[in-house]
Every structure is written in structure tokens, then in C-alpha cells.
Amino acid sequence: MTSVDMRTPGELADAERWTAHNYHPLPVVITEAEGAWVTDVDGRRYLDFLAGYSALNFGHRHPGLIAAAHAQLDRVTLTSRAFVHDQFADFCHGLAELCGKDLVLPMNTGAEAVETAIKVVRKWGYQVKGVPDGQAEIIVAADNFHGRTTTIISFSTDPDARNDFGPYTPGFVTVPYGNLAALADAFTPNTVAVLMEPIQGEAGVLVPPEGYLGGVRELCDANHALFVADEIQSGLGRTGRTFAIEHEDVVPDIYVLGKALGGGIVPVSAVAANKDVLGVLKPGEHGSTFGGNPLACAVGTEVVRLLATGEFQKRSAELGDRLHAGLNALVGRGVLAVRGRGLWAGVDIDPALMTGREACERLAERGVLAKDTHGSTIRLAPPLVVTAEELDHAVAQLAAIL
Ligand SMILES: Cc1ncc(COP(=O)(O)O)c(C=O)c1O
Image (cartoon, rainbow, N blue to C red; front, side, top):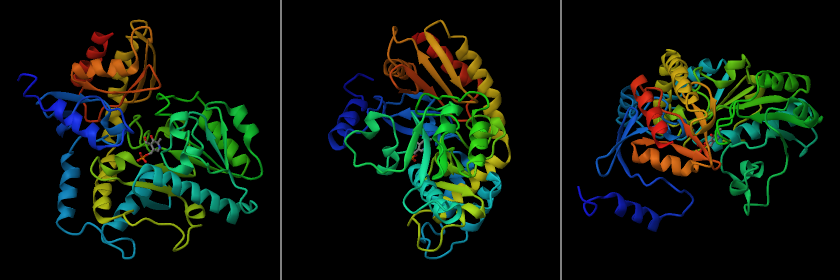
């Protein structure tokens, strides 16, 4: 094919012409995908090592998930929560059991689930803990990423996410991630919750020091505050366990879930917690037209079923060891550091060699899709259906560009 016949440049120009420039995508225009692979409009194939920021943990178009979606498309897709539909209870029951919690509240995007958790812990603070009206405080970590709503970016420490979007929502206290002494000092009688990612994804796949999450749990208990774990990116098999927080045998009061819960097909998010927490919500106090719709629940039920087998967690743990061994062998050879757990890695490229963006562009030229973050870090998060050979191939491409 000559460059004149290629569709990619025209598609890129059209996308640029007709959309707000709130993203800076790699110059790849995808038209088809299956498993760990995507194909572009010019027929080139790529290994997808971003997997929709972990929304595609089960790979593109997993047959069981597609079958569940197809079957539901032929029956009923939307009812609103004004009525109950026959997929709702199964999904909520299955997810509650997967989380070991009493109740589930389904929403759509991750940010909506985080907002839901914020509202729930505030209400819990006023109604259960007895915090004076309007005084609730939530402790968050520096370098967090929890989504893009005005309240959530109010406690972001990333200037790009935050600047010029004020006025900001008050009620958040920021501490350095991984520092228990700083966290202990931040509690006040008005603290209702600590909201954290068990591994910080956007920040560069930062794993907290051993014992940190257990320490957060103890401090929450000692201060009668709730521990909210944002497992939207780290959860549902990504790190080799169902939840990343399990690596420290810690159970949060609230799980916040999203991304892979929708099987890469529909946006599905949820908050899971016990009755003493989620029970503070009464009819009319919170909701969503699309949250918990029949199509979302049908796909979500299949996601829960896939996770209940433990197969994906096992794959992620075993193949994750292989990925990390391969990446660690590059340290000192163009890579400064590697972090992560399971099939999730943050790789710091030596900035003297190239930026993270340049590294991702060169990887794409070699048929591997990944995404940079914060200058010189690239994130690798292949679908959990990736094979050992595909992992080795991707690591070899990284070695080649370095
Ligand atoms: C940890 C975490 N929380 C929340 C979100 C927001 O999810 P969404 O983009 O679906 O709103 C993300 C998205 O990257 C995330 O990684």
C-alpha cells in the first residue's frame, strides 16, 4: 500500500477537525479488535498493552461477554430504576458476593462511582458518626487520580486536571501517598473517610510501601472513619488478585469499581459496602438513569462469573511475574525503574534517551500500543488473556526501541 492509499492520515485529520482537543492520541486508527490484538484501518495489527486503561481486562470482545450482551440486546436494554428488571438482582447479588459486602449500588462511569462514594461517606459522617453539618472531611492522597468531575478534580494535585476549573469543592485534605505518619496527623474529629487507590495508576503505577494499606485501615478504625478503596483501575484481576488491596489482606469499608466491570462493552461502575454504610441512602437521595440498566447488568453478571472462577487472577499473577522479570532485565539498559503488580507495570524510561511519548510512538511503530504518563513513564496493562509469547514479544519490542 502506498501512503496515498492509506486511510490513517485522513481519519486522524478528521478526528482532529471535529473534536475538542482534550486528548493527544497516538496516531493509530483502530477498526477491529479481538483478544489482545487490535487492527487499524490500514490493516496493521498491534498488541494492545493499554487495554482501555484496564477496562479490557478480559480482552477485546471476549466471547462470553459478547454472547451475554447479544442475548440481552434481543430482550430489553433499558428500564430506568423506576422499575426493576430481571437482570438487576443477579448482578448486584453476584458483585456483592465477589466483594464480600452486603450491598451494591451500580452506576456507569468510574467518576460517578467515586462521586457516589463521596456522597455516601459524607452522609454516613453526619448521620452515623455525628459530624456537624457541612463539616465532613475526606482525606485523599497526593498524585491521586479518581476521575474528572468538578468535585473530584477539586482534590487533584495535577495542575492539568485542576487549573481553571474552579471554584473547587471544599472538604478534602491531601496527604503524601505512602506516608502513615502524615496520614495519622491529618485526621480530625470531622474526618469521615480516607479515599485512596491501593496502587496509584495514573501517577505511574505506584505501589505503596509494604504495610501502608494495613496502616490506613488501622488509622481509619482508630479514628472512626471509613476506608474507601478506589479499585476502578487496580481491581477485577489486574494485579493477580480480585482486588489490589488483597495483597495486604486488607478489607476496605467501600470498594469503588468500574472499567473492567463493563467487560469493555458498556460503562458499568459500582460501589460495594455493608448495610451500615450504604444503608444511609434513602429513595430519592441518589441515582442515575442508566445505572444498573439491563444491558449493563447482563454484561456485569458475566464479568462477575468470569472473575469467580479465579482463572484471570491466576493468569495475571503468573504472567505478571514473567512480565516483571522481562522488564526488570531492562533496568540499567534504558529503563530506570519498574513498578507494579501482576499484569500491570509502570516503566520509567531514562529521560536522556527519550520521553514516554516518544517511547510509545516507537512501540506503536513496532506493533505494541502503550500509554505514557508524567513525562518519561510508560504504563503497560495488557488484557489478562495475553499469552506468554505475546508478553515476551512486547518486552522484546521495548528492548529494541531502547
Ligand atoms: C483509579 C481511577 N479512578 C477513577 C477513574 C475514573 O473513571 P472514568 O474515566 O470511568 O470516569 C479512573 C480512570 O482512569 C481511575 O483510574
